[in-house]
Amino acid sequence: MTDPKSTNDPSSDEVAAPSPANSSAGNSTAANQDVSSSPALPQPAIGRLSLYHRELHRLLETNSTNINSQQLGRLVNVSPPVVRRDLSALGTIGRRGVGYDVQRLIDRIGEVLGSGMQWKVVLVGVGSLGDALLRYRGFERLGFELSAAFDNAPNRIGSEIAGIKIRDAATIEKFLVDHPAELAILAVPAEFAHEIADRLVGCRVNGILNFAPTTLKLPPRVAVVNVDLASELQRLAFAIQAQR
Ligand SMILES: NC(=O)c1ccc[n+]([C@@H]2O[C@H](COP(=O)([O-])OP(=O)(O)OC[C@H]3O[C@@H](n4cnc5c(N)ncnc54)[C@H](O)[C@@H]3O)[C@@H](O)[C@H]2O)c1
Image (cartoon, rainbow, N blue to C red; front, side, top):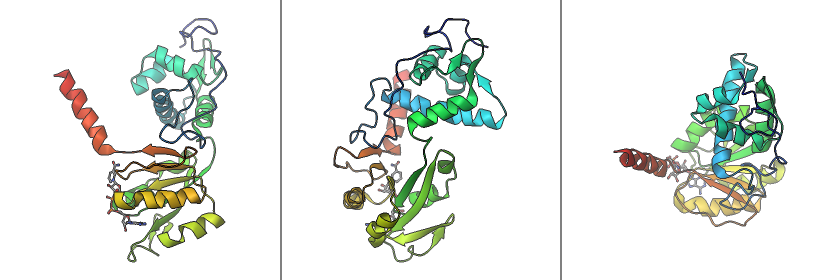
């Protein structure tokens, strides 16, 4: 079920694109606060690629092997031309009359997003949020291994969550010398976030997923993604209000 159009036609699933973007959401050399430095892959496209990736994994579990832009667009509520444009940045991966091979698309998107690689991730702060993140099973599938968790509360240190031992935050540096990790998740109270981030960066951590409601000022080599559910809710409320 593919649009019968020719190669290089953006309305066709078979699209030969300019060279694939090397930089990605997981690119450790991306500028601080800006994880997309590629003009071919702006932030919204990276977000959509991640959604395509998730839906394609689901499809694979149902033994589907092929998909076209219309079907993929329907799954993530994006129009087929937008799907084709996003996927065109990945190189020639669609075939006229056939669409996209699901496994190939998963591999290619994974490569571009950095989840085709294996990443070691450390978590600092094992309170209610950190606890939930440790129990979440979805990271591994995308190549993110939570390799260690740290906290400074004596009643937490030494306990185990989902098979991961909670270590003393005072040992972050020693652990990272012996077991380097490129990514970290920060789930400590805001007032401690910067100090911990600086220590992680000093241990060659290159990317931080920051849940603490504070702005981290880190060297440009460090990529930071801030997650703020409250401001996402604000955006949602704004969108609904605007419709009224
Ligand atoms: N971004 C979001 O959408 C979102 C949602 C919930 C919470 N948060 C933020 O995430 C962070 C954690 O939230 P929570 O609800 O899990 O809080 P929490 O108080 O339950 O957990 C914080 C944990 O960090 C530990 N900690 C404190 N100082 C530390 C230090 N210096 N080194 C190591 N560990 C330290 C504490 O012992 C505790 O276990 C907070 O900054 C909170 O504001 C963000």
